[in-house]
Length: 166
Image 1 (cartoon, rainbow, N blue to C red):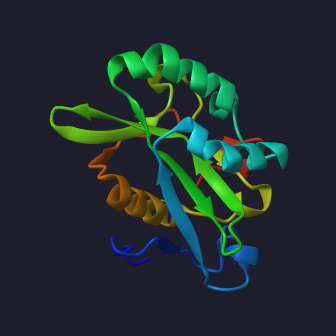
Image 2: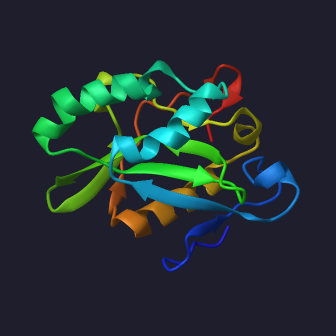
């Protein structure tokens, strides 16, 4: 998959990936990176209400509590990646946060070592078939949007509830 140009706000996802709208065409997924939990809540809640594939550590209440008590006091800021299909319907939410470390802008999942399972929230019809290449393209776009220099994504299960982790 070719790298996503910084001036474009859509990531091309191949038709093999169900995150491609309806898995029938080569339409893109629009990527946004939002800097507050409140800004992410409408999409986050829609996925949660639609029985998203997720873990306890991607629940909004858990992340909000962690951010208030651990993240904010240590300078952590939200950089939540939201992918939407061509209709504007959320496909996934990657609850990431950023902090400056040694002059580098580092993104990681909220909770860091307090979270033992990082996965995000995924629309059930979108997760299967997505690969590391698709996620790499999403992260490259997120990096361009939010000036992220490095992603440290730890505690990623290989599978969750019968779904491969892309």
